[in-house]
Length: 117
Image (cartoon, rainbow, N blue to C red; front, side):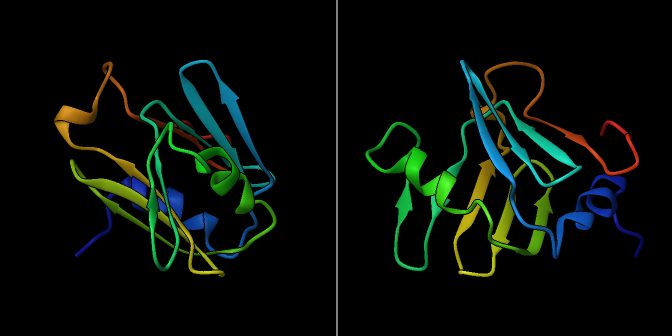
């Protein structure tokens, strides 16, 4: 079975390090030295033993702790979640269920080749 276009594009993150996390009023950007993911829904930061919800103590620090860590896998499940896993077993999970949306879009992805997905 052929992968969805979005999954094909975002798979290019595997092996790249997170370069920066940008907090902009009501959205976040995760930049990977070229590709950039904009999350319009606040992600959950997960470690091997816990989940840190948006707004909770340590949430911003957790997201920033992934800077410099290589991505080991990216899993996109339509209408469920986008999960980016790092070499230290931490994960950034963006919920994509209908009830999570606060507007018409949940994520935007600027691929290495300049494609906006």
